[in-house]
Amino acid sequence: MNSIAAVLGEVAEDLAALLGDVVGADAIPGLSDDQIMAALQAAGEVQRRLDAVVIETVAELEARSLGLRDERLTTREGCRNANELLQRVLGVDARDAARTIKVSAAVRRRTDVTSGAPLPARWPALRDAMLDGRIGVGGMLAATGPVEQAGPRITDVDRLRADSELAAHAGGDPADGFGPPATPEDLGILSRAIVTFLDPDGAEPARDRAMRERAVTLGTTRDGVVPIRGALLPEVAGQLQRLFDAYLSPRVDGPPLPGVHFAPSDGEFDTDEFDTEWEGLVPLDSRTRAQKQHDTLAAVLGIAARHDDVPMLGGAAPTLVVSVTAEDLSRGSGWAHVDGVDEPVSLSVANHTACGGGVQRVLFDENGRIIGIGVSDRIFTAHQRRAIALRDRECVIPGCHVPATWCEVHHVREHARGGPTHTDNGVTLCWFHHHTIDSSEWDIRMIDGVPEIRGPAWWDRERDWRRPRAVSRALAPPGR
Image (cartoon, rainbow, N blue to C red; front, side):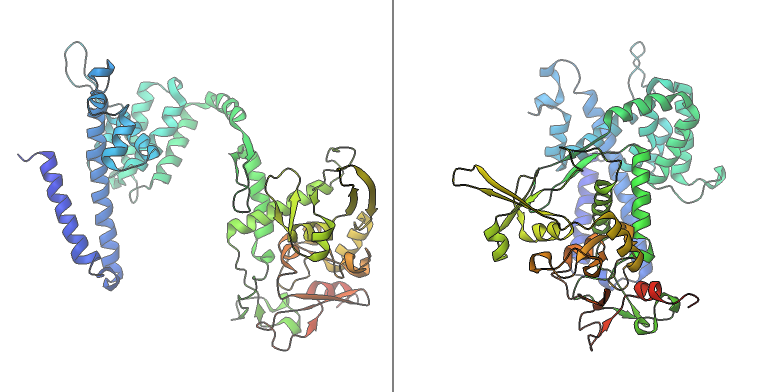
């Protein structure tokens, strides 16, 4: 009988030849759809069977790495622990090594102390499924994780029943009423459902644990962005997801960044969505979903800061403070600073913040002493915001249906250039379009207190000025 190493060595040689003859020869692009699917299915089975060999071997490795340090296999091989050894031997990172070790604990067969006979694995049916190539490392972790997390609240008898159910589900056994083989996600859902049934009293301990682990932290600025990390309680994540869904539904997807064209309508869109002057132009948005969700969160934070129920901070509503020198502001170049953020930001951040907020001039002498404070009132009042929102209905950029109540109010003529804080000079823009209006090819003007929009040349060759659709409808006589 050939050794395991010899057999695997032959498999490795065959795979190397395959890579050279097929992949290296660039033959894969010439495969048919059926051949692509067959190749992926075969590769998946090989990968799962290799997982099984690795897991079983690591289980024995773990068994030989117990006891006194000098007697451990890991020590004899010059490693501190099994994780380090697997990183070096398998060429994986610490996370993948830890996942492998965790699965090996689930399938390792221990020895009876009295008789020396091997005992069943902790998850015998799932181990068999792994050896049959029906489940890999990811599937094992997804299936066993929820049950293991419940700990002693689930008895050994119930755990073995769950093991049998999960193994049948993993293989898609038609005799047991299952369909195609389950994905790791499917196994995780079933495992959580089993835990919910077997451990109804575990909800409160789980809630206590979740309350301890909830967190949101802001990292240090890197490359102009601040990383955010944490863990949300389910109800908080659900509420945030509902806000994302409300903001990102198809009716509120905004137009693209400059350079991405509008596409002619192919009849799939309701012509009532557009007035005659907009008919046939369907806006496309180039932002990724993650970018849209960022912009949604920015809008939500802006709304929250304006809400009457928000606690006061320093005697005023929580206010974003962006500082910039008068020289840089007048010159239009340089850096600004956001209070609470370590690294400087682009001057455009100061301009954007100043447009929708207020400017306070603070004068210092050469020693840093404050010698003067001035306030220039440029914040639209609540009454002005309501009136502008009633007129505009939504973001005034064509195709962007973000409701006006979610929008910021933009000074069409900059306040710094004499533009008044008046309803005749304010329009609603969503956070994204307000943030990019100066760098995009969209133009806005006010005619007798009514906004008009001019789009990029690649969208409208004539670059005509047009009233936003929502504004036109808002100003239309009753019955039209």
